[in-house]
Length: 365
Image (tube, rainbow, N blue to C red; front, side, top):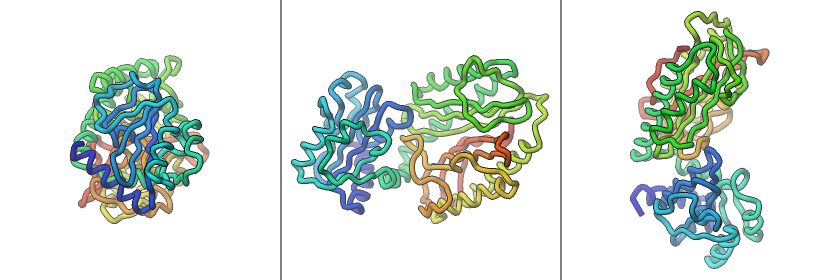
């Protein structure tokens, strides 16, 4: 087992000890954004179906697959024991009882674990473990930060490709296809989740849309670009785009001003010791003081799963630490709910404050 994987197990086992767990079951599935937890603890990247990494408090971990998933991934990449079983939940139950385990933590209990495997664990005390697991992996190693920066490089250039391909009258599918070609060429595979927000020639509406052929782009739009490179660390980078002759609404311009204030506040407040609540309040002030609502979470930790804990929000008292990585994307919505502005950045927490890794100017392009 390599040193990076050993570091991860040490962090996770420390969190398990705090919650008095006998074992941890980490669930992952192929569905976009839920693959990463399995890769984080095993090295294996799910291509199809689902899998579980099981970590006993003492002893060797293993990764369990349903039998029909034997040939749906590059199993040589796994660095721990691999076991195939018709019903993985039964296998986990048998091994856990053999260890004398009674209290199992489960990452993915609410959203990822299959019903049949959940039912097989009847008799154990099951502890939802999404938040403690995410907090244990929130501080990135230097090796992880290399992967994060590579994903940011890919995403940033992808935005530029999208911008170059954009023109009023083109379909959203045509423009997004150019960016997706770049993403795939750089090793993202299918680890992309890219959308658009459109509306009129002067403002965008708050709803996220699939980039379809039927969606003809006007003079203003908001791309939403989320990708993970070959290292499987997700990032988000995008800016609003307007044609040269667009006459943007007054609310859109005021929201742009608030975005400049948010970026400045993030640079100043994203330091070790500041709480997620503190950062949320600081970066959202420019929007709320102008009377705008925030229709989407201000920001959240991001890593090998697209959305991780902690989130930047009201009442979240988790303290930031150096080398935490956050996706930030205030979703500013007008008081009547008709207009919005949404731009994304991936930020690194440092001793000197927040650093936006893409380096793109905060503006409407």
